[in-house]
Length: 276
Image (cartoon, rainbow, N blue to C red):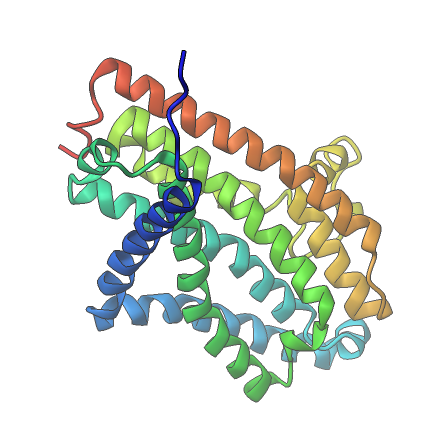
């Protein structure tokens, strides 16, 4: 049997063009609506203000908070990376469902991997639009500079964004399989993990039987690392690598779940009718 000759470079260029076209589509959706841009900044800004003022109050009444200025604000901003990264991915996916365009996308030459890469890129773009100005305001209003974490911020960001994508893959797959009736799942899954990720308190606060479950979640290691960095001025690199290893498992599981749900949707013929 003669194998066809495939131009790999053209294939890669074509793939990148399809990914770029989707990204441009989503950027146009955001840039064409001031309300959408405002929404990206509004909630992170409100949360930063609320926790920032709480941090100031606790600093006046607690020696711990007086010595660790920004502990709560840092936790809020890092949590926003996870939550907004997931929502950015999920919103772009839901845009296709709401517009009943998902079936047409999968009937086009667009591959599943290309679609997911475009959604991942958009999650970072949407996150940047909201997080960067709020981070600057946190420095101006409360004297907390998230970028002062230096290289540690890169490790925190990478691990949190990977977790956000794995959660978004699972929720998008569920919506694919069960339709818009499962849309609420796309919004709420991250909040289910919030108490277990130990965003605002150390793992030792949890009951002993619950601590192994918390430590099995990658974000837990990130927030523990953030507290160690603020309180002790040291980065636990082993914890970051452990979080990265767990994230690889989470991403693999999320991607596998999405492909499984997509295959199921294609088999039962509901792909073209999703959103109706």
